[in-house]
Image (cartoon, rainbow, N blue to C red; front, side, top):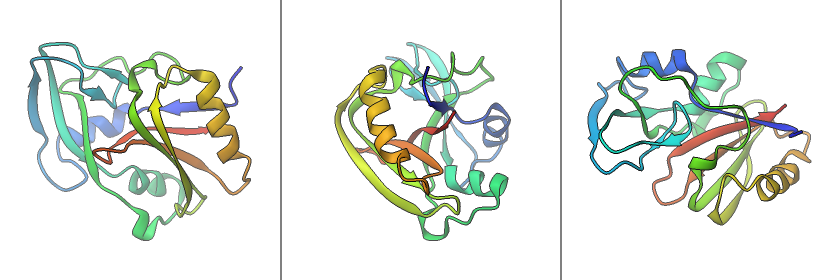
Length: 165
């Protein structure tokens, strides 16, 4: 049994973002003709022809509002794809097999939202639970680590959040 849980963007937050995103803009509608866009609402890649919304998301800002943290200069706003309409969300809380990629960075944050470090992972396959657990075990060995964000390196976008189970 894993000692970590992964989290997509919360369904209530996605509903808010579909109206106005975290940059104060209207989401951009996208029909994904080829499929393959990483969906942060359900932690899988889109299928050909799916209707999506491309919008800005500030994960640490949202987390800080819930927890009383203050990420200060570490607050980032970046692009994410979500379904244009509500979906069923992710299957389970383990590492989402569909969210791997060429390069990922695992960024560790403290309880106030300050960055504690990161780990670049080449050819990361999220479904590789053993490798992912080892990376997270190393990061969460520091008792000050509150959460880890997994991000795509090329675009810098948030993929999903990881917390202790």
